[in-house]
Image 1 (cartoon, helix red, strand yellow):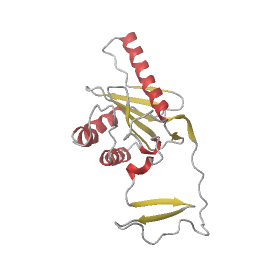
Image 2 (image 1 turned 60 degrees about the vertical axis):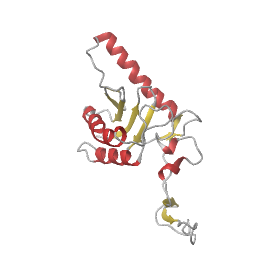
Image 3 (image 1 turned 30 degrees about the vertical axis):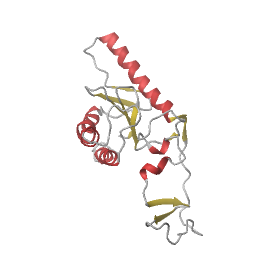
Image 4 (image 1 turned 90 degrees about the vertical axis):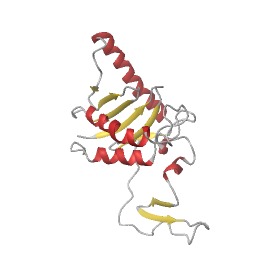
Length: 213
């Protein structure tokens, strides 16, 4: 079973967090003003989008060579070469990029969830819950909290229900590193909930699943 990605939406219908694992198409850069900061740095519409994930110790890959750069307080030391004359490993071409900007993609995901949830309530009554749906290429899983946060996970269509995984993310990393984190402002309309501890803890939880491939 393959887990593709995770979206978290707040009660204002805004995407406040995103993370992916086996996504074959890279998300496209969001348009200016289309998404909040601290959601997913690589698609944030800024020339310095990766700054929130970097520090003075950075790793960069050029021509298949990994170079470590460490700056001290007095500025850069002796520059390191960024290219190698010959590499036995040919550089891999970058994966294709989505045709939709990330902010539009997130809106579509939320729109699908909202539409299906409302349709199910009208057809089956208020006691019926929408927990997942499946297409020929993916399966969408939903877990909604009492406070209105929606956890959405995309996986391959053959996966069993991953609602328990979303519940674990909520009860574990989300409560520990978002709700109880004094540096994260809940229900903020100006900023997402991303932080290093939450992202690493969520990644560790997902990769540790027996169903993760």
